Length: 187
Image (cartoon, rainbow, N blue to C red; front, side, top):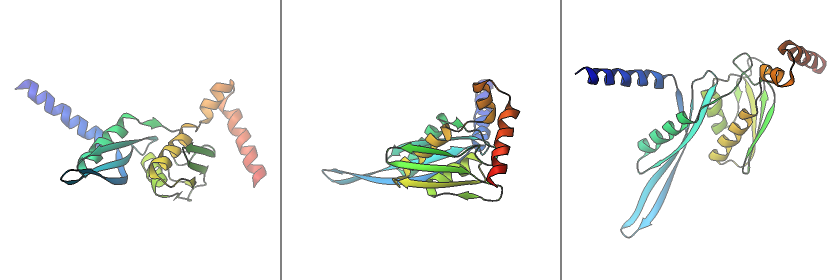
């Protein structure tokens, strides 16, 4: 009896761990395979998963039924989480471009109160990430798969002041003061 109880505890822990993630269904595609007796339908799902604290991932799942495809996509997304550095936990540190195939995106940091200004697939990524202020534009392909992958390409290029300072052998304060000086000249 004791091993079964331990197994039950592990399952509860996993449920609690899974509940910390917010998953958003971005796109479902129905595909048909023509067979001798007619058509067999299958479904492909694109899901974005995030903890709203700077980690986000996306996954793709295919199955004969929609719930199974979504479950597979969610598991795939949780396996491929990436951490994105956010300024003040609400926006990007700097403007960045991303590209995947014919899908191109431009992400810009925004002042407080701006909100998420972005199209459908990109909006799902930002909401799962926990970003509150960002301006984004999609150019080229409107295919949700390409848009999500281009957004992830841009987010992976994001660098925090701490990482830049470490790479350049400087102090974080030197890099941040330079940014404040540039912001003052722009205004």
